[in-house]
Image (tube, rainbow, N blue to C red; front, top):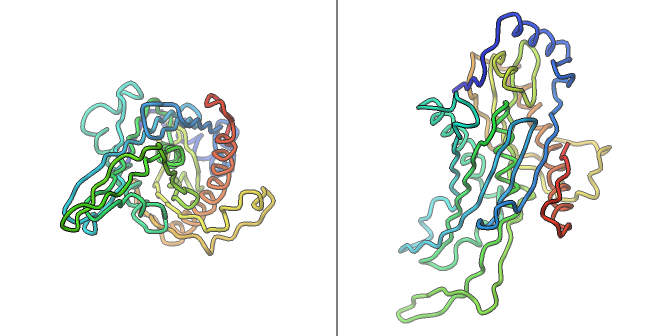
Length: 310
């Protein structure tokens, strides 16, 4: 569905569309440029992991919770990750009512689909403890302030919160009749997720004939169509020291795990192809910058350390 956060006049729409087609947006950015991105992790000590993401005036808060589940057979467990998105009415009056619920459901489905891939989170197997016990991970995301481009922001928040997550490494205790029990270890040992290949989802917007990234709420009023693109980066992207800004990126080894039109009118094949390629290239660059940022942040003892991502 399309979500419209503001209402602007026809003259302003024409101005925005013509500017985007010329590669000059209202705030001076190019079509593929982002507003300043800030990411802070470990902001909620009562969660297993958390992150706060700001893209311009869009503000997102993500928290991770883990619950131990007991079942008859963990081999039948479909998914250990569950995404839930809440749209605060304080973020925008347009979030009130059914329309906001539908938009939140669309965003959570996009994240759920993107992570529904074995390559997305290799450590997911650590959540299966025994034949009868497993961890289920809840990623709860709240949109605190809205000024466009929510999909990119919630995707960055989810990945950052998972990076910050610590899960208790439970002990396995053999029992009678082949059963296995679990209990807390004497020493509180934990494990982290390797999120280097966790997907990022970006929204590529068609404004006139231009492919625009990171639209503001005003620019979203002028969007003809939106394409969600989720990509699992190649293993080469793990080497953040090697991949300097001058490194030429090849998209051939990427795994595209989601292509979904999120609203607007029909898209021609060639136009969709160019939007998809734009999304893939953007995810590669965002992922490299994000991993560098998270690694640098984790090396700082002060959790209040905040540095712009771009």
